[in-house]
View 1: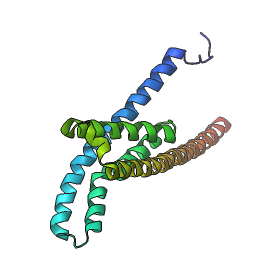
View 2: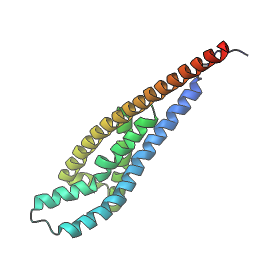
View 3: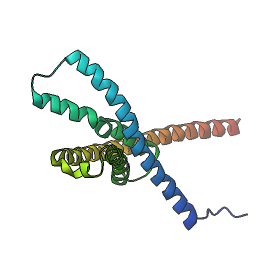
Length: 178
């Protein structure tokens, strides 16, 4: 038996990439679904407490913020967790997860209102695009922060392990002298 480690085969690498890709797709759709559930409850509770908005602009901004909450709050949180526990690219995660959640959203809208509704309201399409880009940018930043947190935790664990190795080596050296 040799002590050499074999490099993972092409199929193993492809399988790992496919699993990571499916995880990213699933996290994007989950962010949309959970964000929609959370934002519907939050918007009704906040609407009751804040009352009717005097300004149409404030009402519009509040509505957009609640509708796109999944993209600017939940997806970056999932991105941080993905970056913390996986070594995937932050940009790839943001693109894959953000687009999968947005495509799911667009499919639901088209199922309810027809495909024509997606491009008839140009303002809504522009708002969707802008918030998608902002959400993806926040997700890239959050995923990078998760990667940095993982690197810091690894450095701490290495420092503790090295300290324990040094203590054990000193203990063994002292035990051998006796």
